[in-house]
Image (tube, rainbow, N blue to C red; front, side, top):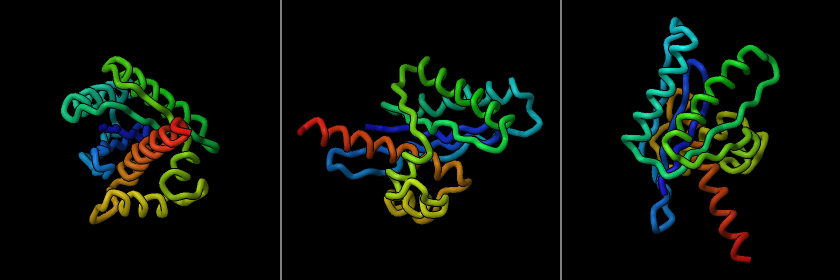
Length: 165
């Protein structure tokens, strides 16, 4: 089972793919970020997101995707821009027939760090430890995307346990 995790944004979109092996071991397959120039028009940014996501899916062939839900308090303008990017991401995944799940930041932190109010560094350290990486992936958006994928894996495991009862 390959899971694509995505941390949406308008200038940087983190992505990471993990695989759960038959022995239940979880390994990282690939991870990086889509870096978009700030000088691109907004329409160009959305096109870059769509095109890059198509390439990532065609190369790594994930079975499922997990996308972080939007959480913003201070800057509504930024929130609206990221919402547009999320829409493009969700549409691209739908067009590629990738079943997609969405998780709130609190759920991701809880699943990865064991505490819903964990700070960014705690979550990143857990991503590094769980996936046995030599260092925390950079930029932060990449580590966040791997956390989203790990959250979905944890959620699937919990659902299986609950369904057995």
